[in-house]
Length: 401
Image (cartoon, rainbow, N blue to C red; front, top):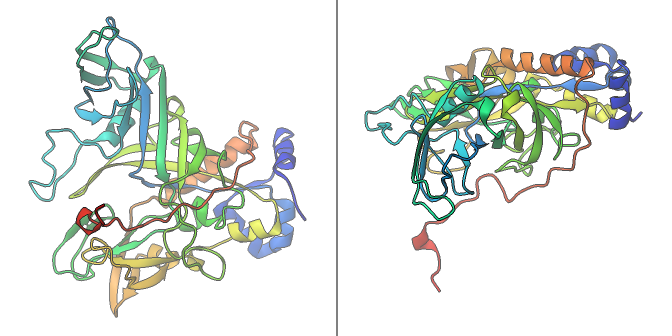
């Protein structure tokens, strides 16, 4: 039994497509078997909602009178520096960018109350954003300073472009030291006092398509509350990692670079995030439809939390020093139970991602497809990159010609 995306899209147009979430397909396969489920179900929807640092937005603000060339000068949105080295009035705001006057970790641990992710959230919410720019002036762009307010509805272009989202599996962070440590995985209590993870597990997009057989360049997705696309493999995309017998990676593996119209999106699904002692970020909602093209595909989508293993890593020593040590592998079922056993100790767990929001994304995407307003696309295969954690040698260790 095999289907094509074109056949599924025809059923979507006719209102005949059968669409279920990645949570619902588990029970369907368990009750009816994979072969029957593959015949009866056309699309499985997935979702994830969590902090995704490698995110940002590029904007075209339009020309002032007289004109100004932002590139080569300094530009700020609500006090957050943005990159302008493209052209006259194009800029990029990164989720992790911080105001120049933020104290960082000088008062340790820093609070990082406002950064680029918060600017993006406020833009999407329709708030006015203060723009201050200085430049050096040219004959064709004579203005040297600009102070104004911008609003997303007035921008020529506002595009979310995230270089690395929807990580396929990820570390469980713990702390073996005797002091509290502050990381992008949250606050970690000393002496194995806590274990933090960040994945929707059985709902997560790339865990439902472990070999990227249906997800690729051009895949239409739910992004930040609007429609987006997979633009490329995400940075650090690395399929060549250990996998369980079911094909699911047991380490961080695939990632997605995604793009979409920021004007379609909503602050519920793009939230500025402050990580104590670490910095600012952006919490992003991503949902990907999985076309059920074969029995093989439906078996992948029926993966359960107890079949997905994540590596436990010490963030007080091994992670910062780039040591490859993994303390253990634990299932997402155990992580979501609230406690895991590690080195004979009962360790409480906490998730940085929201399973309930991920389920809401999958359900929303399901409704979009059932309503006929969202069809599937024919993707181009994701290609592997050089690897996720290639070590960069210090300059003094490189040969000098």
